[in-house]
Amino acid sequence: MQAPKPAALTRPEDENPGLAANLAFGFQHVLTMYGGIIAVPLIIGEAAGLPPDELGLLITACLFMGGLATLLQTLGIPLFGSQLPLVQGVSFSGVATMIAILNTGGGLPAIFGAVMAASLIGLIVTPTFSRIIRFFPPLVTGIVITTIGLTLMPVAALWAMGGNSAAPDFGSMGHIGLAAGTLAIVLVLTRLGNATVSRLSILIAILIGTLAAAATGQADFSHVTQGDYFGLPSLFHFGWPTFHVAAIVSMFIVIIVTLVETSADILAVGDIIDTRIDSRRLGNGLRADMLSSMIAPLFGSFTQSAFAQNVGLVAVTGVKSRYVVAFGGLILIALGLAPVMGRVVACIPAPVLGGAGIVLFGTVAASGIRTLARVDYEGNANLVIVATGIGAGIIPIIAPRFYDAFPTWFSTIFQSGISSAAVVAIIMNLAFNHTGAANRNGQPASHEQALRQPEASGTSA
Image (cartoon, rainbow, N blue to C red; front, side, top):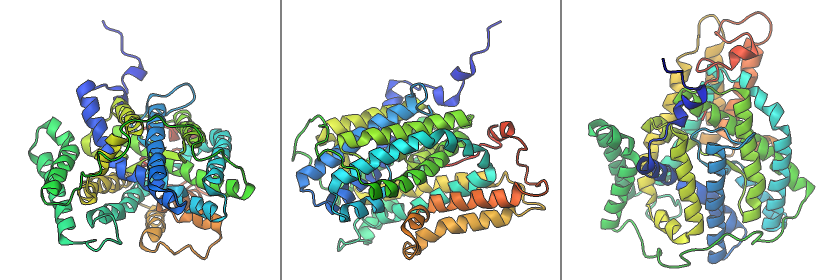
């Protein structure tokens, strides 16, 4: 009788679908997150007053570092990497803080120094932070995942309207029609295609949508041949990092937010692919984030974290393999080494991404609702916890200036809908279900039970 395979070889994320599938699905992941990964260097570079060629180098550095971070997270080395299908890239959480650092006169070197120092502190506190997994039962993870999907929907809407709110044709019927056509292609391929076509529906729809945009004059490929075709990233191209206490403290708050959001992403993808996430694996994933963030400034990049939109892609396609995402990391590295490839991908019109994003981001929210369906709402306050947690997460979405009058450290945390939902859900769960008499929400009574999957490790994107 054949001996059973070791558990490490039977995890769903360890399936390797082969070279062709890895390349196709990996490229699909890159297309899904490309707009997000270049948005941060665009914003920061323009705020720093970089000329176009320097701005291009900043974007290239972020692509290259995103690829390295993705390989570390998916493949892993001892103590670093969750070995889950998570695409890494520049985190949005620190944009406001980095702009504030720029406004103090420190320039990009001050940002890089703050990122390096704060990430080192984050790496030191990770062993303690990773133990919060026991405070993420389905009640909490469902709230966080649902909020992640809702938080991403405005991004899809912005893309569908054209991506640039200052453009005269922003929100035109042409843009929205292109987004709707892309969405329709996704739905048709999902409904009528075979298993392979269905899994590649997002990629195929983006390609068809881009071709349609080119035919109608909504896609411009004229800039593809302008600029260098290949180039290695240089160390400290934007200057040696400088270290300022105030900047480091501000950036450490961003690091805490990043740790919370990455914890949610790791738990979410674990639930989606139905694999076990314990505190050790969570800690490995968080350490990979912190190590990547420490290294990123060497190449001219910023804090690294998992991309929630790609968690949605995993849910939509059902492709659970971490090797698929690792190939996506290799593609990102190639884009970082070959700016011409980056310019080709950059030609994909925002409305096309918006049409695909509606499905991707909506799937994340639907995954959260599915998780919340496992929660017991009888004889407890869980319904109130869900209502308050999701409400807290939606506030920054519908009222972005809600926390402007609050202290900077507070607004940095709560201006992220994901962080707001996570903090409120954890605190309320502790207050209502972990104090006083035993609760009836079905939560585990011990830490060991809390680490079981899928009942307690939950879902988070």
